[in-house]
Image 1 (cartoon, rainbow, N blue to C red):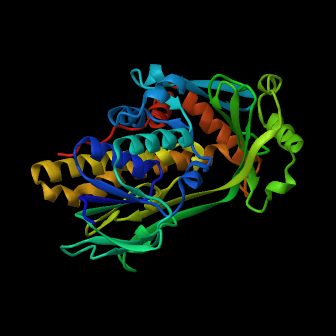
Image 2: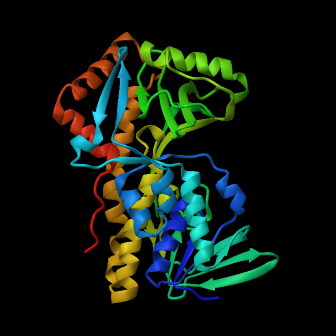
Length: 394
């Protein structure tokens, strides 16, 4: 088999890249080791930056998002018993975020992929990448018992942190940066009305809490727990009681509880590799970087990687500008590190750490009070939350 771009991974980043390339007339094949149902079963992010929303529109997959997604003009910070609203639209010249689950984004992209007839291989095993620095890069994999070779010009590694793409780069090439946080988020999905029209991020002496939603009737709540906690030790009643303790009294009084649909603990970590490319292989999304979920940047950073790679490939295949391929990593990393900084700041300001004492707690509250007490501080938070601009590919 031959194609122009081989895409490893059928998560939202791989599917979005494939859809954009297909619309531009650039052939691509997607190879995924899991089944479609498994990919759709992942419960992940739900806050989309303005840039990702615009990119989904450009890809022609935004119709259901426009109907069902929730446009949020702001969000709330809860600390020291009070609520402070960050007016995203007012502070950023009209930019907003869209609350629309990653599962729904993936479903829309999968349906678009089927509709356009572009080839995808699910349940692929023994995926191997070859000649990444040679003239004939190719991918081999096994599908339905048949060994297949796919020749291509570029390979996009969109297969996540544990995927084969990054592991295919020789040892010693990549420099890794990592921070593992000593806590996680216990998340509950429930068919209950949201406690607030916008998200609430709460700093509390007992630990962080987040009130989010997937729709007007389905909510997603989180509380910070230690790394040693087990999901089975948390009954629904215990979760709701703990969440109420961490919210301002007037908010807790409005909270509607109910049986959980899904309950899980997500660890928090920061991770970046440099560079994000090796020969004809380009790492995209979680294959190259992880952020704590505090700033809602994980899926959005993957989308910005997709945007950069797509713009480069467009000029490579339509204008022959192969020199742009060397710019991919540098362009992506400039934005990634700024998003890592924002996620690190949000995580540092809102969570209780093992060494947090009364002084540290008061410093967190004072830092937040300082930022929300000035328009410049609020604007800094807002412009990072809606997403920094995508860098142009020239």
